Length: 114
Length: 114
Image (tube, rainbow over all chains, first blue to last red; front, top):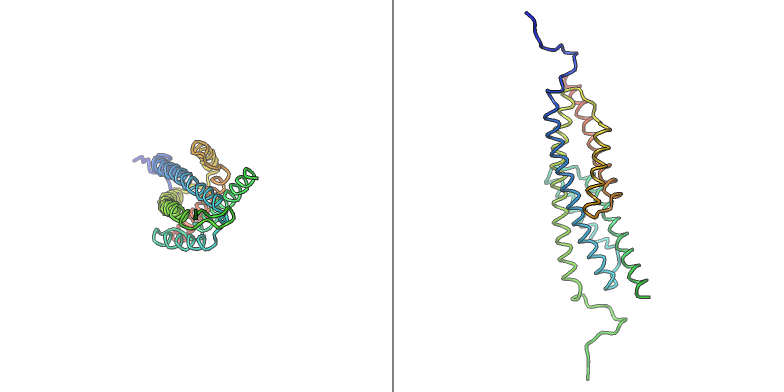
């Protein structure tokens, strides 16, 4: 009797995994779009913080606030089952960008008022 | 007539900016929680991709897919008014973590089957 069962060494037909892989990648792409848009909204908020700080002469960085953010993030990651190290590195990168933005806003404000 | 108007050099009273700063920081904290939970969901999906790849002997990394993801991300950032360089660096960090996860899943699967 002939059989179509592949041997153990034969490549698995793409039909066995491609639809599932494409479905998962579709979800990942949707989640990436959500991440980008939430990140864009976060920068809209931090730019308003930067303008407020520049108007009232507050320093661009706030180490106490940053430390509390990182600690809160670690707790959120623990609760969500997410690697806290990765999230901390990502957040550090974002916060550093925010501080540079705040410095730029303060410099532009100072140049405008000079 | 007496006046309570501060001089230009006096520090601005905290009451003038603290409520607005706290409101903006409340929004930032909410957005951070959303970022963490979406990132956790993204890793749930990529772990399933890792398991699927390990089951079917597919390589942990897929440079073509990664390149398409980065290009799509750039477009999403442009549309959302977000700095594409920052988003690319963040996504590269996430993708590298995902590849390490996929390699680990494949190694664990191989060890289990050996």
